[in-house]
Length: 100
Image (cartoon, rainbow, N blue to C red):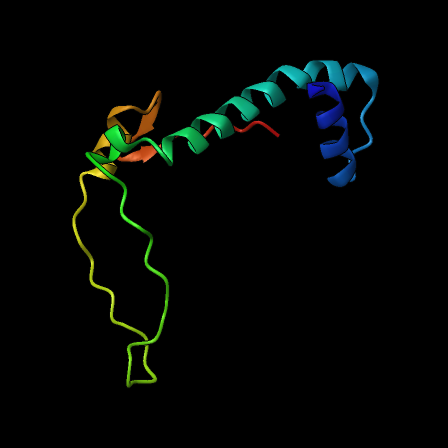
């Protein structure tokens, strides 16, 4: 299944890959899918966010006004928690592997 997904992705990216290139790239593609699965799981991990996840705000208009609400920056411990769990850092930035 993974190989077929990789071939579809390569086709969508207009890549004409030889069988040798496919075999060489397939492990990194599988690794990339693993990262995507981990990110999807982290999005719903209440422990990583320190408790129940709040509903995401939408950009509904304030009643009686035609202006959008004003957002204010709030400090969150989420950034520190994500940085603690990173496998590789560059300063305060996560290093994302080049997979494709």
